[in-house]
Amino acid sequence: MGVYTKRLVDEVRIERMRPAQIEEAKARRPAIYVPCGALEWHGYHNPVGLDCLKAHEQLVGLALRAGGLVYPPVYFGAGGGHGDWPHSYMVDAGAMVVIVTALLHGFERDGFEAAILLSGHYPNRNQYQDAAIARYENEGGRMRVLAIVENEIDGVGGDHAAKFETSSLMFLDPETQDLSTLEDSDEDVGAPDERKNWMGTDYEGHPCYGLVGIDPRTHATSAVGSESSERLIDALEGWLKTDS
Image 1 (cartoon, rainbow, N blue to C red):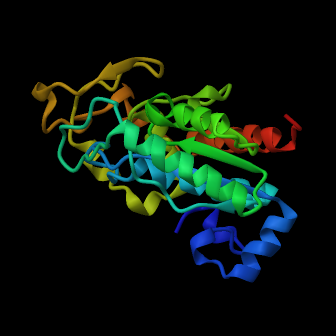
Image 2 (cartoon, one colour):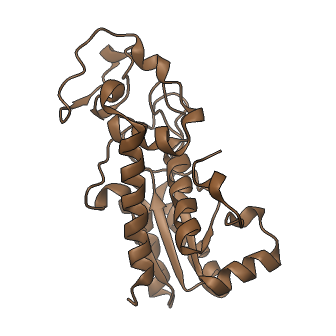
């Protein structure tokens, strides 16, 4: 169970809520948060669902602090370069534009006044989220909608399953990781700000195979993940408080 989920007193995950609970929560804060991601390779040490596990738990943290409801994880990703890897499943961006547009209209019909689309799979925003928002607005949608990825926030780093994503899950849901797989190498881990690409097939079997970013072996920490998540939640809460 995730770090913010453990702190819940009142349920915020909409799929687990009864109608009266939903209406009560919506009356307090008529906002809904959608975590989007992809099922894809995130190294030997991370689960393939890292994108949504991360985004969903961060949005639970937002609801815990600011109110609102969290939609179930949308495990559909487009783009990003890992589509041909094992256990990685990408979808057509056009199909997702249709789905997300329909969701936004549905949220508005149900009385929500604001929606946040947080993508743990960074390409989702330019692949389908922005297009879905534009289509929704062109079709008369009036609800406030924000599409965002975490590393658009000042002070929040981003990568693919390296220092920052590994750190996020170390803080948010460490039981899903097996960090012992990062220990089987004597290779120099590099400087704290040195980014590297381990996607080449010549890295297969290497502890960091498939990662892109700063080496997580000594540079990933729960403290980094905590700071990133709290900065993100701060920014999202600030957006909720603005009028436009």
